[in-house]
Image (cartoon, rainbow, N blue to C red; front, side, top):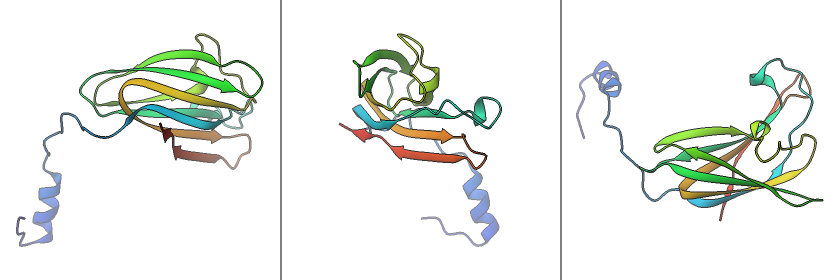
Length: 146
């Protein structure tokens, strides 16, 4: 541990660039579940930033790109998917369920669940912005690893 004589020295030391970790081993899973999904069709905000949406925020801490498949499940019909995407190595990807189109758009105002499968360990966080009312609601939770 370094000994610092002044608070200014401590602050200067904190500003020094630290070596980046190439990859983080041992975190993540290959299969994740989000049991509760719902995209409101209404929004009070203007533009994409304030549009009601659901997102899966994915972290790939590994040294290889992660090929990801998302399957959407419904209460009253067969699943939809897979929706395919790639999370680059040592990067994040914020995928809005609203933006999924192939093989079909995820319907608004319809409860759904999602299973996310990857060929590399990733971490998934689920987020919803509900802007149907002027007082916005934001929900965020870590998905369930299988």
